Length: 320
Image (cartoon, rainbow, N blue to C red; front, side):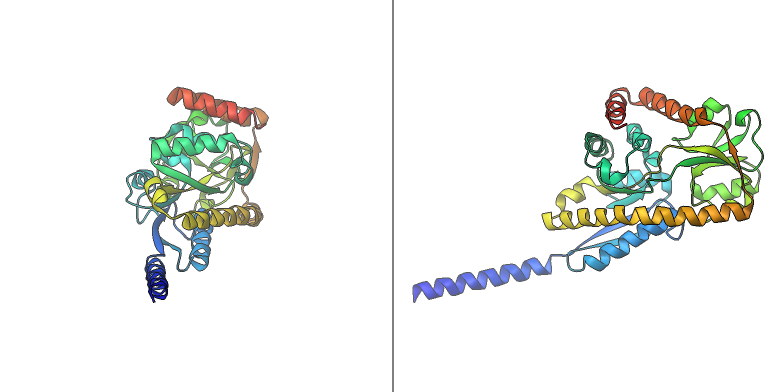
């Protein structure tokens, strides 16, 4: 009788444990995105969230609280660092105040699926953890370059123009002799309408969603850098997840990186058509313009974070 009773008791304990595990199985992460969710760089993150919530029922869910309306863009990095939010979708240029070397990610030629297999990704993971208390889950937008867009024709190599900037453009703009105006993405339209700026730096796609296309007359070529929008998870929150939940998020990171390739091709084709229809003229400043952008930014990062930048540049050069 004792043996059957022990077996029955063990089975009962196993059943209760399984029930308890099932009841506590699902975890919800709060998230924000750096631009409005219905704009170009917001929409693909929304797709990611929707796909994760579809596949992760009973395991993990993401509550997308919104964009800059929920937490202002320039405050999102600190909100992640302090645990106010669990996940953010944001380019590294918006948290260079705490991790300048993190923006070296835009200077590397490889796409994210290839880059995550290299020592450079490991270094990025290290610095995000040290400086931002963040786990680097994935990135999207890569495969797209940055450009300068203006409301009037460039003369004397853009010298004297007033351009909206963010940290990743500032070294190039300074080298070009332009006047700098710093604003969040949501404030650029008003600056264009009021003539506060003569142009702005922005990726090759997405300015029409923000209403900037109506005021844009010229695109300066060639493009430079590689667009990066990182998906970051607060490090403490990441550490608190079970292994199956981490594996699920890594799986969804793969989904996002695959979706990014299709999305980039789709959006580039759509925006190329809009650029032509809007009559935006292309002005090519030659390949030295592109090299100047890279040289200026590496030099700038080396001044702000000497040792990390030295490491990252060596790892980047090894990939070329």
